[in-house]
Length: 156
Image (cartoon, rainbow, N blue to C red; front, side):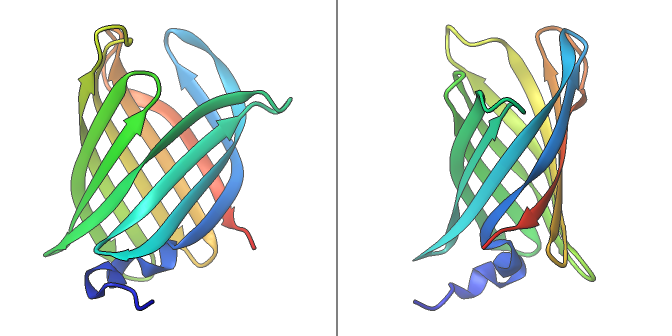
């Protein structure tokens, strides 16, 4: 199966990435976690995305899934569903140079029972076999601030 031509800028993301992360937010205690991201080519003009995290003791923490779309002109769109009651449409740009960077700002839709999340910002920076991520969030009455960051390596 040939990779859709529009996905060439992010082809290096395809695969599974795993590593350690650190989380903080004004309303919770700081924490460490393990993270796994998988970007899968399914033969369409988007990549399937799956993410999961777990605590150092093995307890599951978070999962999310979605699709990364690269519609052209350096634009990127990330459509993500979360079991915590949010859907996220993150849009921004993909920058290809010595590294591949996704710089995204998200609009959030919250279900009636979900905690209030107002906005997000995500970055993914791929350099060689190292993928660094950040996730900023404005939620539960707090202004936009860093919530998560991780350093991942390609597995397999």
